[in-house]
Amino acid sequence: MQTHGDGPGRKQRFKERLEILRDSALHHQVRSHLSARHWTRRQWIHASLFTSIGVMLATIVPGFSTVVQPAPAFEPYAVLPLQLPQLSRDKELGVAGDSWQIVKVKSGQTLA
Image 1 (tube, rainbow, N blue to C red):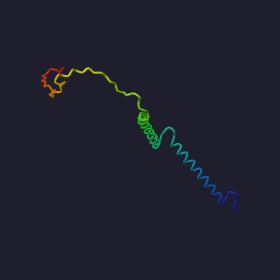
Image 2: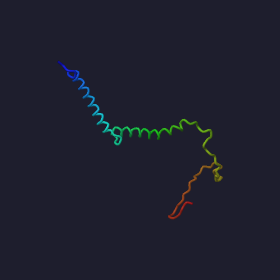
Image 3: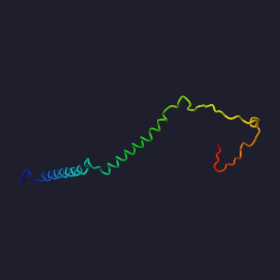
Image 4: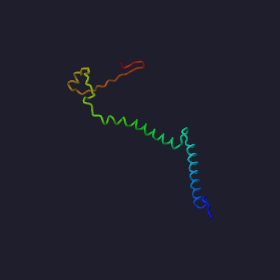
């Protein structure tokens, strides 16, 4: 004769309860291992990866702003009148000649 607490149902309930206790003990160990004070290697890798991506985006993206902007309406060049020396008579007439000069500079002299 079986009593109320005996039999295969009791063994099944015992195994289920044991499994629940085992899982809760493992979760407690994992939670204590992954405390808020210490980062795991995986967390450091993720943090460095996302930081690197953020730095690259912050460096590269502002360079694309000039591509999107329209060209300015004015030319950024300036025209300045310059005082040039007068051409020699031979140059005005178009006579070909050598415009090079041979200069001998001694120690201590300058070309000014």
